[in-house]
Image: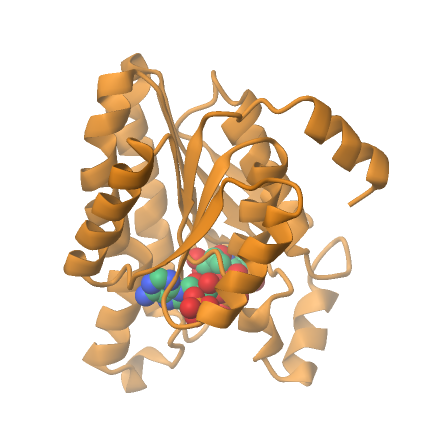
Length: 258
Ligand code: NDP
C-alpha cells in the first residue's frame, strides 16, 4: 500500500468504534479485508479454522497500526462453533457492526463423481454459515440501527464453473440470500451486499495446476489474476461509503463477467 494512502487512512478513520468480524481472515482475501478495515479504524476480529499461526501473523501485522485486533478460532460450518465465537466477541466488544462472511472452501469434481460429503462440506462452509452467523449478529444490528453485512460470493456463483456444482450452488445461494435480507433490513440502516471476486491469486488459486492458471488468465480481459487487496478495497468501500448501496453484487473480476 502506498505510504500516502496509508497516512491518509490513518488520519481519517471512518470505522473507528466499529467492530468487524472477518471469517476466514487468516489468509488470502480475508486477511487483506481485515488489514484494510483495520487501517480505516475498525476493531478487527480475525476468524480462522485451523491455521492459528497465519491468523497470529495477520494480527501481528495489523497491531503495528491498530491495536484493536484479535484472532478467534471457530469452524463456520459448525453451528456450535459459531455460537461460541459470536458469544465471545459479543462479550468482549458488546456488538458486531460489520460482518464479513468470507470463509470458503472448494471441493471440486465433476458432478457424476461428486460425493455427498463434498457437497455438504461446501454448502455448509460457504452458505449455511451465512444463516447461522447472521442469526446471531442481526438482532444486535437491528437494536443499534446500524449494520454492514458483506458476503464474499464468487464469479462462479454467477457464471458456473466446470466441476463446481457444489461451490456454484453455494455462491449463487449467497447472492439470493444477500438480496432477500437486504429487502428485510433496509429500513434498519443495515446494508447487505455481496462482493463477487473473479479469479484472485490466493492459496485457493495457487493449488490450480500452472497450465490451467495460464488458460484462466488468457480468458480474463485484464490479462491477470486479481489480488486480495483489490477485493478488500471493494469491501472497504461498502463498509465505509455504502450507506445507500444494498442488495448488490459488486463484481471485482478484471472484466471476466459483466
Ligand atoms: P483461502 O483458501 O486463501 O483462505 C480460506 C480462509 O477461510 C482461511 O482463512 C481459512 O482458515 C478459512 N476457512 C476455511 N474453512 C473454514 C471454516 N470451516 N471455518 C472458518 N474459517 C474457514 O481462500 P481465498 O482467500 O481464496 O477465498 C476467500 C473467499 O473468497 C472464499 O469464500 C472464496 O470462495 C471466495 N473467492 C475466492 C476466489 C479466488 O479466486 N481466490 C474467487 C472468488 C471467490 P485457515 O487459515 O484456518 O485454514
